[in-house]
Structure formats: C-alpha cells, structure tokens
Image 1 (cartoon, rainbow, N blue to C red):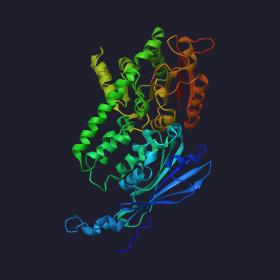
Image 2 (image 1 turned 180 degrees about the vertical axis):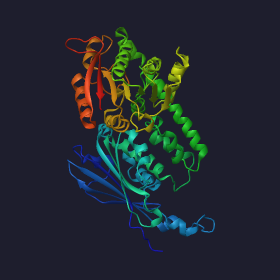
Image 3 (image 1 turned 30 degrees about the vertical axis):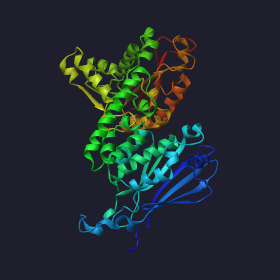
Length: 484
C-alpha cells in the first residue's frame, strides 16, 4: 500500500535573543548541517531554516513510517481491522511520537545539560510552532498553555481525508522562557492534546510525567486533566498521579509560608497569603489592614456590587468583602486548593449573618488562566498578587483579567520597592517576601499600568497606601483601573 499522507510532524523553535545562534549550542545540533536520526517508527531530521545572530530557527521534522505502525498487527483482533489502523492521522499528527523524538534527538536540551549553566538557565524570547496538532478548535490549547505564560495562537490545518476534517491546527506559542522549560511543556502537553499514546502506559510514564512536569505541573489549574489524558488507559496510575500532584501543591504552599518555595510552583502560587517574613517586615505599619481598607474604599466609591478576589490566599480580603453589606456577590479564586480550604475555614468561623456567608463563592483557578467563572463581576481585586508572578507570565495575567474577565473596575496593590530602605529588617536589595519574583519602583509600576490601561481601554489612577515618605513614597502602591 502506498503512502498517501503528504504531511509529517514539524516542530520549529525560534529565538530572537542575541546571539540567537546559541540555540545550536543548547540543542547540540550544528546550525550549518542537516542531521538525520533513525527511530523505531521512522526518522527525525534536524535542520535550520535560518541561523543568524539576530534570529535562529531550528526545525525537527518527524517522518513516521505508516506501514511500520501497523506491520504485524493482527487485523482480526483489532477493532476496525487493519484498514482502520492504517487509515488514520497517526503518521502525521503531532502526538507521543513527537515527544519520543524530543527526548531522543533533543534530549540534551530537554534535560538542561550543557557546558554552560548560564546558557541553560537564561530566559530568552522563544517561539515554538507544532503542526499538525489534533485539537478541534483552540479552547483546550488555551487551557493547557496559557497558564504557563505563553501567548497562544492556533490556525486550522487542512489534512487529507474527510474523516479527519476540522480536527487539526497549527499551534504557535510565544514567550520569554528557557529552552528546557519550553521543551518540557511540549513533551508533556502535546500527547495530552492528542489524547492517545502509541506505546504501553505503565509506571515509567508516571516517572516521565513527574520528571518533566515536576516544577510546574502541580500548580497548573488543569493538572488533573493533564494527568488523566497523559496516562490514558491507566486510570489507577492517573488517580495516583493526581494525588501526588495535590501533595506537591500543598507542599509548595507550606514552603511559601516559610519562604522556601522555588521555581514554577512559587510563581503559580501567586495567591498565597503573606509569609511570616513579610508580616514581620511590615507589621509595625499594619499594612495589610490598611491595604484592605483602601481596597474596600475604592470598590465602594466605584459602586461595585459584585467583586472577585483574584489570588485570595488565606482570605484576608475575602473576609472583609463578605462582611461588608455593600457587596451583594463575592467570589474568590486561588490556584492552591490548600489556601482555598484555609479561606473557607476562616469564612465558616467568621461572625456574620448566614445570608452574607451564602453570597460567597470559592473556586480553584489561576489568575493567569482565562476562566469564564470570573467574568461578569463589577470589580476585581488583586491584593499583593502581581509581584508573585514571573515577569514573563504577566502578559497572561493581563490578558485573563483585562481582556477575558474585563470587570469595570480593577484594583491592584503591590509593594513600592523604593520604600524598602525604610525597613531595618531588610538587607539592601532584598525583597519583602522571599517568594516575590520582583518588586516595582513607582515609575516601573506606573509604566506597566499605563501600558496595560492603554492596551485594553481603561483609565488608570494611583493611590498611596500607608504613610508616605517625602522622598521614597508610600510603602504600598495602588492602581485603580476603570472602564465604562
């Protein structure tokens, strides 16, 4: 039988961070040579369509042998027979075949191995394109990749065979990240999109899931879906993996409270309550109380009747919103199930009429992820949240809050880095919270806020929270975004 599919799986990786040809060093594949690698199901070809110091693109073309996929399969025992086994999209749709090729051909980069640790750890502007991917529409693609901080784009792809019409897209991801992190995301999530594995799913697959997803998967809002689809046909393994991920999320929350959490788990756990370290630093100023009072005042002045607390942590602001009769509907989200449970327990213990408690909704989600449940509110509040997010992931936060949810009023508070000089407990250059990914100066915060407001049609104003120093400003800075 002749091969009829004119497609092969194609992954391209592009960087514009100079010197862009460093991509060749990271991949251990020379930009000036075509290299071919034999695989059990076909061949992988690595080449560079462009390779300058300004822009470099590496391509991994996977040519799967469709006859080899079904050779030796007894058609009488296969549901659908040998014809169904052959006439499908397995030879060209990106799937677990691509993950295997990444591991075997680009394994050095996937494992973060290099002569230069700085080269591996350096974040750079990266774009990945995978085609064709089996993903009807782009909703699932967005759910999987947007929480990781990528700008996501999908384009329909026409493939041969009416039976597969409308099922495939080209997936494009863009963001500032490390090559190792990008490859780990693709390694895990491309098979999740495909929802099929070409080999036996056993304990080794659980190890792979945690090896390549261990520093980001526990905090992903779709971790259960990812585990179930990655471990397809192995429900017991999937349940075990989900339980382990929940434990990791809880551990990350505990570590955040003591200032020892690291990496992606820290960045995703942006809603965690203040740590003991930050409380000690700011306690003399009673900043948390003053922040909450300031946010409530802004929300009342804006006439908001419904409010969502994004990244609620242990529920400090949530409790104040629930007690205030001005707000008829209150919701709170956090990426950590443990923090939500803490908030719920505090809410249950709080002295307030039952009718007010019943107005409150709590659900697990990430402020980096577009979630329909956070749309439709008059106002959204992010109390000391943005500084817990990796700078490369802030565009995802902006898109989900100002683009997708789009409340009339958005209130954001964040530390003023300049004021840190007034805290004797802080060393020079140290952050107030060991989990902060950055702390903005007043000029930096206003520049970010103005850019965000202009991009999404908001007007923005600023308030000080806490007693202002004549030179250094106030300890907390607030931006109030409003649109008609």
